[in-house]
Length: 176
Image (cartoon, rainbow, N blue to C red; front, side, top):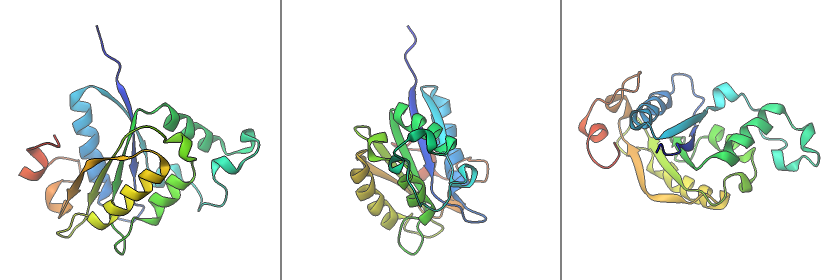
C-alpha cells in the first residue's frame, strides 16, 4: 500500500543579489526528492514578489478582496504537514524578506505543525543568531521548531550552485 507523501513548504529567506540560499534550497529539495516521501513547495520571496507588508491576509475583512497569489499561497500553507525555513543572517538577524514573507499570513495557517530551521553563512557561525530568532518566530506562529538546527558554515564551500554537497558535514550524519 502506497503511503501518502508529506506536504512540506520551504521558505527561502534571502532576496540578495548573488544569494547563497538558492544552493541551500536546491540541496534540501534534492535530499527530500531522493527519499520520495515528500511533496515540496518553495516559497521564494523573489519569485512570489510580495510587497512590503502593508496589509496581511488576515486583515482583509472580505478575503475575496485579497490578492489572488496571497490566497493561493495561504491554501498551500494550510495544507502543509510541516515547514522548513532556510535563512541567512543579515546584521545578526533574520533577513527582512523572510520576516516580510511570513508576516503576510496568519498564525492559524502555520499552527500545530512542526518546522525545521536551516541556516547558513559564508562565515564560520552558519547563521546561528538568525536561527535563534527563527525559533522564537516559529513559536509565535504556532509551528514550533524541532530541537535540531541545521547550520551550514562557509556555505560556499559546503554546497555548489546546483545544490551538490561538497563536504562531509553535508553528506554524513543525521541530516541526510
